[in-house]
Amino acid sequence: MGRRHSCHRCNQSCGPGTAASAGNHRVLLMGMPNVGKSVLFGKLTGLNVAAANFAGTTVEYTAGTATFGGQHCELQDVPGTYSLQAGNQAEQVAVQMLNDTPDAVIVVLDALNLEAGLALLLQIQRFGIPTIAAVNRIDLVDPDTINLEHLERHLHGIRCVAVSAVSGQGLATLRQVTAEQLTYNAPSRNKEPELEDFDPWPAAEAAAADALGGSDGHSHTSVRRTWDHRLVAPMPGIPIALAVMAAVFTVVIGAGMGFRRFVLLPLLRGALFPAITTWISALPLPDAATAILIGDYGVLIKGIEWPFALVFPYVISFYAAFALLEDSGYLPRLAALLDGIFRRLGIGGSSVIPLLLGYGCGIPAIMATRALPSRKQRLIVTWLVCLSVPCVSQTGAFIALLAEYSLGLLGLVFLISIAVMITAGLLLDSLLPGASPGIVLELPPLLPPNGRIIGKKIWMRAHSYLYDGAAPMIVAILAAAVLYELGILYWIGTAMEPLVTRLLLLPSEASVPLLMGIVRRELTVLPLLDMQLSTIQLLTGSVVALLYIPCIAMVVTVARELGIKIAIAVLAGTTLTAFAGGTVVAQLGGILLH
Ligand SMILES: Nc1nc2c(ncn2[C@@H]2O[C@H](COP(=O)(O)OP(=O)(O)OP(=O)(O)O)[C@@H](O)[C@H]2O)c(=O)[nH]1
Ligand SMILES: [Mg+2]
Image (tube, rainbow, N blue to C red):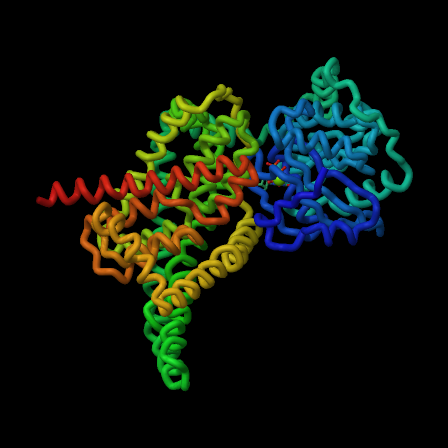
């Protein structure tokens, strides 16, 4: 199997170079979804990887170097698996990695849900690889309620260590025990053991019962459980969900707008831009160079204002709110609540999380569809993310364009996006062949969000926004400035004139955002800011931008994940829908106004 790393979700280089510098020992981190493998991986390797409180965060493995008793090893964070039956793509990756002769496996168990983890551990044990059990989230239970010696007896000597990945408790012992296994136990290979006829559950049940000595290990979580019940029942679940969503929107939009309006814009427009303009104008530059730097698409003006003052504040406020939802465990509950509605779209509640991720960035959203149970569901969710879910940068741009003019118009754009999502979901469900099997949604424990982890996540997102968001945006603005100066933008504008001015009833310079938008989604919106547009034109421009082709990086991700044909279909489908939708809005608006 080739080495693939999910680096665009972590902000450090965990490329093959990191792994190559490790010793020749290879250690796997395995376990059920959402037990804390990625947090533990981060603690053991010092690398940042995506971790969140729902199943299926890691869908592709990440490798890094960890040190066990002075030995440098390659540690691999394996996607979570419920069993070794290889039901979905993430599980297939896990089974392949187990067949790939690792030197040891650390199986991460959840102290709050020992039995299910033990069933998986007993299956892994059959591979004959030295195995260590890390009983994680020990911070959430009374450690005295779990008897590790009893557990080890049931597991025929597999060493069990109580740890808390978040606080770091028990990690020194885990390192030491792993080192002992690597030194004294060579893998006695048992390739492809017979798992078909092996039922691990009776043994898992007995081991868990003995280890917990009659206590269920989480008696003090009963308050949490009562709340669980309430969150997923329609009453009061739905009002709570609406309140949570309203709070999230208010915080994201309010904090983002406040920061932009009261801090960033005064700073830039009041101080920095005048200074830059004076400074550049004083230089003995040719007119064209001055225009490229500080003209209509001046890279020193727009290249700073758009990525940093208009989009960045929302990236931060969105990911802060999202990290809270993610780590508390609320998202899967929201998914369970919406399950009935989404089933009618042919995608089931398990698709809610990839869709919600899409409101941040489409790329992790498309990757997250790997955890969905069928290709049909992957296709539908990928289409919906590409077509109708604006990413956080584009949302920031919509807010910049519309919010100060009319909040109602902003709301209308979001309503249209939801209407398109529902229509497209129903349509795709009936058009695409194949079944959409339902899966049981697993509800992770409700956890108090951890300030340090949330802070680190926001830092990671901000960091990756600079590279994956702001940098391409600045390059696109520079390219536009150059094309503008060369007169090429004017020429393209004239060529697209009939489409833009007759169908969409927009000024001819509105062809510029359509070109720039191929690079980044928010660039279909931001250039509209400087045009004098009527209400209908603002709405038309926004609808076209919403439905238009996703950014180039997303199209590449679609091609990589689902094939080049699907990527081409997405390109063609979104362009057509965008022009069709924009034409309907413009023409209907024209008729209504008359
Ligand atoms: N209280 C507590 N929470 C933890 C601990 N370890 C992880 N978590 C939380 O559990 C959630 C899941 O952690 P992840 O590391 O994403 O889990 P994972 O096993 O990698 O999950 P998948 O990639 O989906 O298989 C996150 O919200 C973590 O903050 C722990 O020791 N104590
Ligand atoms: Mg993970």
